[in-house]
Amino acid sequence: AESELGEFEHYMLKEIFEQPQSIENAMRGRFNEDEATAVFGGLNMSAKDIRKVDRIVLTACGTSWHAGLVGEYLLEEFARIPTEVEYASELRYRNPPMSENTMIFAITQSGETADTLAAMRECKRKGHPTLAICNVVGSTIAREADGGIYLHAGPEVGVASTKAFTSQVTVLTLLALYFGRMRHLSYPAGSRIIRHLKEMPRIIEETLKCHEMVKYVADKYAKNNNFLYLGRLYNFPVALEGALKLKEISYIHAEGYPAAEMKHGPLALVDEVTPSVFVVPKCGIYPKVISNLEEVKARKGPVIAIACKGDDKIAELADDVIFVPDVEEYLQPLVTSIPLQLLSYHIALHRGCNVDRPRNLAKSVTVE
Ligand code: G6P
View (cartoon, rainbow, N blue to C red):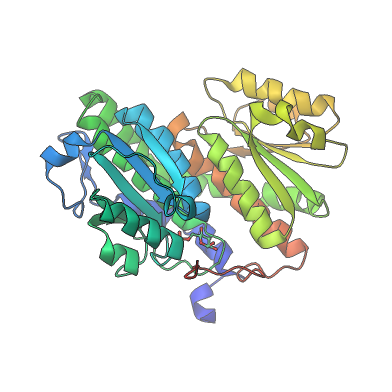
């Protein structure tokens, strides 16, 4: 196993650095450029039935659930299909009304998570087409699903999920393109999405150059016992995922929040020592996120910003800035999640935590 690690000290770091390749693998063979859409081999549904889908439910646990939140924004924006994201552990015992043409996707790296499997079985029992977005080939969920999309991310060993998350988001983007092109999305809009997606492996490579700066930031803040993670729109799920990574492997309390909701509670947590990680790349509501950031600064809270290269203003507002490449808003989670993965990794190292095998957690949770 040591040789598989190659130059890396831990699987988590190796898997973070594999992302240019794993994202590429998630897209391979899945573009139809003539029709400016995506193609999937395993949906096992006729185009006619897929066109009838009037609602989508994404169900998952943990990091996969965060990918689902990004998926909701993507599907609603590009395909205009009402989409719901449900914790599998809740969905399995709830009985939400579902129209006949509701389609379910279970999102799971391992394909073995007990709650996700149970939620999937419950939806199948009610007659809905239930598909899997899954990494492990031949896993229980992959086998029991009516069809699905594999991530092809390769084995993920680190308990804290990294590359599976960005692959799930990539596949969900393809899915939004696919459903979009069957409905409201024009040919040029579809072509543009394909062009931008194809650039992502190179851009992720570029993003990983933030590593040195992340190490510096980790050094500076590793002793803090509370963190806030804040973002809006596509970067709201990124904030949740960043906070989860820190909790999982550093055992530090971290709270992810939509930045504008701060004033309804978490702002009370801000003091001179509690750092806020602001995910604030260029976007349509950038000035709004900046004013949320200023609310934190006004209370003397230290701010670490994840911002776009070329954003010269941000250094005056934040205590520390980690720069990432500027990409389309809907692709930002792929980029902005990477410094947060690295930040949790380096803070955990500082605190002497077992990065790949954190206490109390399992890679796949096969019990309820
Ligand atoms: C466990 C893992 C997480 C993962 C979650 C869902 O809690 O530690 O990293 O996100 O299960 O796993 P799945 O395999 O269904 O994506």
